[in-house]
Image 1 (cartoon, one colour):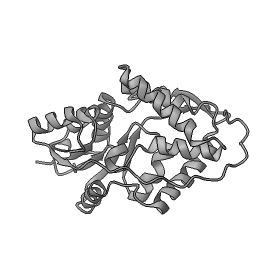
Image 2 (cartoon, one colour):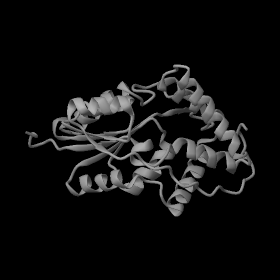
Image 3 (tube, one colour):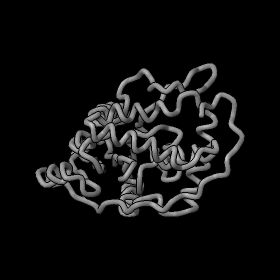
Length: 249
């Protein structure tokens, strides 16, 4: 039973779980367009990272490689473009995976704390968090220089970075201790086998989609399943703005 001073939470992976598609790559296309770069540049970077995965490079390293693409970018500019990108996604429609979003709203109505747990980063995730009314965010945190406020291309020197695999479970345990969350009565959602450590923490879990390794674990543990998110519609791209000082193209 849940102790009187503890409460349940609902933990959600974001990309391809709560959202249709991978938000950080959709943002990358939008950010490159804002700089006057063609979509093929973002496609090329995504293909490069996929090739790393195919070659056996772990998700942790491919996540780090993504954030090297931000090297030299002013944090304020990234935040501004991310807000515009999310607004464009909402206006276009089809950004969220509706069965999972419906579940999130149901958990909120039931009084659960809602926690986003993602390998993405704050600039992309904070607009999502505010829109859906989530209570906490656990994510990868790129390093930003304190004086010039630009991205260094590295991750912040703190625990659970990047927020992939076991790091998700470790960060959730710490959050649960700090915020009196009872994991035994909580629930988690994820779409990839790297989410398994997170899913195994809670009394209930829901897999999203068709990851074969995750489906085998779901059958073993009795986890529920929701359908795979359909591909999202393309988001209209912005007209390029003059390049802000310090941005590396």
